[in-house]
Each structure stands twice: as C-alpha cells, then as structure tokens.
Image 1: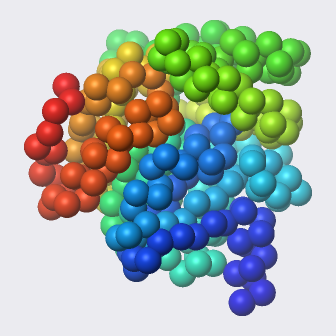
Image 2: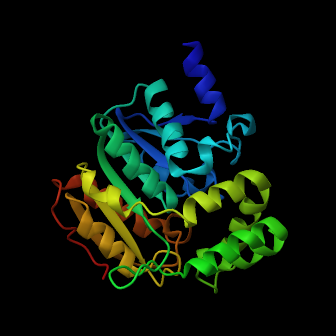
Image 3: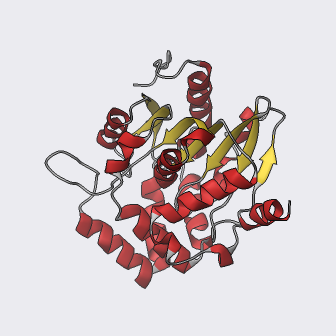
Length: 280
C-alpha cells in the first residue's frame, strides 16, 4: 500500500470513472495530463480512467527525473509500467499522444499481458528522414539545431515550436497553451526528453508489438506527417489506421469531439475491423 501511494504521488496519478476496464492516458512531450481534460471525462461512465504526469512535467515529481535513465524512451517506458504495476492495471486501453505513442509501443512489447488495446495519436517512431524508404518529416541537422536552441534560448524555442505543434492558426489559444506548458516544464527535463524524442529511432520495435492498435492520423500534421502514420500502421501486426479531418498534432486539444468519436467507435469493434465513419 505504501509503494502504491508513493507511485501515485511521484507521477501525480489521478483516477476517475465508474467503469472497471482501465483506460490510461499518456501525455506527449512538454505537456501534462491536463491536455486530456476534453477527452478523458467522456469515458468515465464505462472505464476506470487513469491519468499521470511524467517526472518533471505538470505535478510529476522532479526528483524522480534521472538524466541517465530518461536519456532514452525506455526510461519513460519504465515510468508507464511502474504506474500500471502499482495500480495493478490489466487489460488496459492505453491512449497515448505523440512520443508517448512510442513509449506505449515499447511498453506493450515489454509487457503485452497488461494491454488490451492501444490508441496512438500522432505516432512517430523516427522523426528523421531516412531515405530512400522512410520520410520522418525532418532532416537530422534541423532536429539537432532545434535541440541546441532549447539549450541556448528555451523561451524562443517554446514560442517557435508551439504554433507548429498546435497547428490551427485561426485558434491561437491552443498554441499559447502549449507554449505555457513547455515553459512550465523544467529546462533540464525538457532538453533531455527532447533529445530522447526527436533523435531516437524505434522503427525496429514496431513488428514486435502484438497488441491491437488504432493509429489516429491528423491532417496537415507537420510533426508526424501522413507518411509516418501509414508507415506505423503498416508495420504493426494488428493495426487500424484512421485519417482524421482534424488538423495539427494535438486533436485531443483542438478537435476533442472527433477524437472521442474515433476512439469510441474503435473500442466498440473487434480488433482489426476498420472504422465505419468519415475521416479521410
């Protein structure tokens, strides 16, 4: 019991809902669990909804951040599995955004018995272009330059990246929220997580994930373009690909209704059956 409470405090675990099936939400880089506030409550009637913060994000404990352990995405995988173990979660529906989609895949590969379904929003196992067979969206030199900018001028980096991630320039409040979230994150934590996120390559891990997965692909997503989403879906043995009408990289923030509808329809279908709804 003491270990359970320690983990809850360390990762700022919050539970809600009247269902029994666990639904775990994992936030993306530079964010926290508040990003799920428009989506997660919808599932409280049918699921045991669990949200958490990675160390140094939101109210996640800063002293739980380890520069060596968190230098790779395997450290964040440890965090996610620690939450699952402490809360005794099984048959989990894991909803993960952006880099947490890769963390979710690594967790499902390491402990497949814990997960029933994966919902991957804007996944990218590799952000760099690796011609001739893979277009991740960025040249490595550009990503290295972005990480360098974080070290030298964190505020300028946050202000430049937030609008790119949010998209939807006609609704600037979403970019403002992301920028504020980035700036609340500890500088050292953010720089370490950025390097682990943008300079890693986990393409080789996709084929070993047997958990059924939904790949939610946004339109006009600069961070994880359609070529990447379709690649992820093609490499996962039991995947369903769905192209959303929503634009940008954060549909749970900018287009929550469509995000909820896609997840709801997916969970109502047997694994591997395409979604009978709009999209593209």
